[in-house]
Image 1: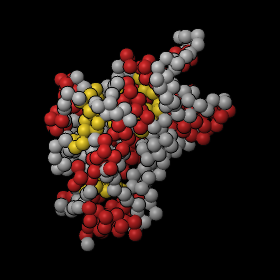
Image 2: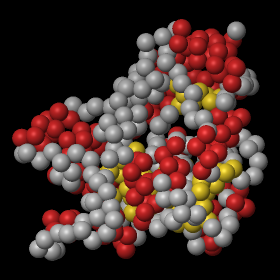
Image 3: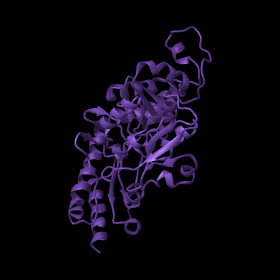
Length: 376
C-alpha cells in the first residue's frame, strides 16, 4: 500500500533528542527550540518567531495579540481546517466566510471588501497547498480599513509570494509542524510576528502570562505573573526532532518538488483532454509541493476514483468539508455572498500521496492508475 502520508524524519533526530535527555532539558524553550526559532527567523525574515505546541495555538496567540473581542468579525475562507475559525470563536468572534477562487482554492480577494462591516477586525487568508493568496490586494484592503491580517500559513513554510515568505507578510503568521506537514515535530507550530512592539506581549502570553523570558535573558532578577496567558511551549525534544529536518530543509523541499513536477507532467495529458483539472500556481508564487491534488468532474467521480486507487494499493483522500456547512460553522459564523465555488470545488478535489521519501517510481505508478481510471 502506498500511504497518503509518511511523517518526515531526519537521520540526526534521535541524536538530538538524546542530547536533550542527557542535558536534562526536555521542557520548553531549550536549546533546540531556540535553534528552530532562529532558523525560521532567518528563513522568513520575520521579526520574531516563537515555536508553539500547534498551528492552532499559534493562531490563538495571534488572536489574543490582535485583541479580538466578543462580537468582532473575522473574514476567512470556509474551505479550511477548523482551527482557522476556532482560534477566533474562542475569543467570542464571528467567522465571516467568503467564497474561494477555483484556480487556487484560496480566498477570493475580490470578495473580501464587500464582507467588511463596522465590526470587522481581521482578515485571515489561508495559503492552501502552500500556494499564496493574492497578498498585495489583501494587505491594501487591510490598510485602508485598519484591519489586522493573520496569515494561516499552516501549509506554507518554504513558499513565497513575490519573494516574501508566507507567514511574514501580514501582522502575524502561523506555521504547522503536524505530522502531515512538510516538516514535522509530531504536533507543533510557530507564530511569526512582524512588528517588534508585539514581541514582548507574545512572549508573556506564551509563557503562561509571566515575564519569564525576560528573566532567562537576565533583563530582570525574578519573574512574575503580569498578564493573562497559557502554556504554548512545545517540549524541546519535539523541537530537536524538527531541527534535524530544518538542517536539510532544502533537500526535503527539492525532493517534494521533484515528485510534484513528475505528477504534473504525467497527468498533464489528462488535463488537456478535459478529464481532470490540475493545480494552478499563479505568477509571483513559489510553492513548496505541500500537496498534489486533482479535480474530478464531481463528487461521484471522485469517490469512484478514490475507491479504484485503494483497490490498487494507493491511499488517496479528499480534503476539507467547508466550515460554513458544518454544525459549528452554522452556529458560530456566517457565509457572506454566494457559495459559487467553495462547496462545488471541495467536492471535486482529491489529494494524491505526497511525502518526503515518496519515489518517482511510485509517482509514476500512481499516475498510471489515475490514467487507467479515467480511460474507462
